[in-house]
Image (cartoon, rainbow, N blue to C red; front, side, top):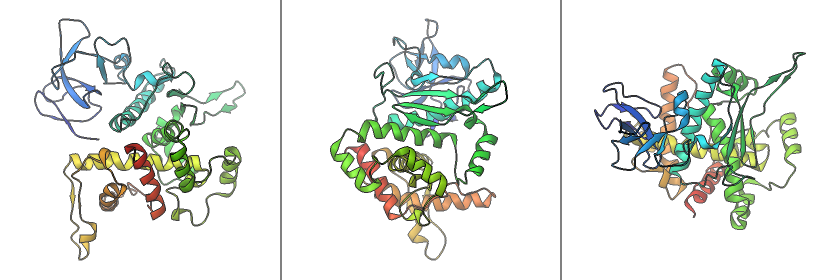
Length: 356
């Protein structure tokens, strides 16, 4: 994520800001320009001009009225929802105020995802554009029967439809699930990045013979029974030496899950490196062999041609931020090991995105 500033007063801004705290200007994110902009009202109700660009005029996404979106679209667009929100198929019952709070968290994570996907220029068809496999989201809650029986909603992906359990937006509930499942890392944004990986596989790899061949050489044959593979994984766990070839224990379950987990980490790396670049971070450890950990993030990670361009600064950066977290008594920000095999898989992702 890059840094933003108010075009009126130069106050630093966060991606989710809707109002400049210094000068009071209303703010809107312009996905076509890739920036958060201070905006001025025009003579037409609901139409705004952006200080970041002279044209076009803009209107807010319909979800802005619910304080769930700050994205804008051209004022003359026939769409009522922005490039991120128009992929929603089902949202929670917003008459429940708790659901409204959780949905806003879901939308923030989803918009963060779309920021990166847009920067990587990935194809994002809606269900209207592609009724069978267009990208859509169902945000659902567990159901409780009259006898108290709970039917849980499983987060997952099927033919472009991504289902997210609304409970994942509850920090305490998500942490409980992370602990119960023995995961070192579980975030709402991480769920979105993982599930979109399945969509990317369908759109980019499945029907491309050359990419599919390379995929199978690295990740394995996805034609093995998926349901049986998951049963084995949950019954037996990951192999003892899984870190030599996989980015997470869950990635060992099936080649599809390996791809989705690796894709999620690719987005973690790209987005975090962009943030580090925006802050002008330079790492120069003051130890005798610190030269091996020196790095300066001064490039656009969305346009890196080689995976080494990402990994070389990533390893020193994670060592630094993990150390900072430990100084605050917090767990490592990035508690993962990137083996040579995993880096090769990340290279597959970068090559696929770059068309190399």
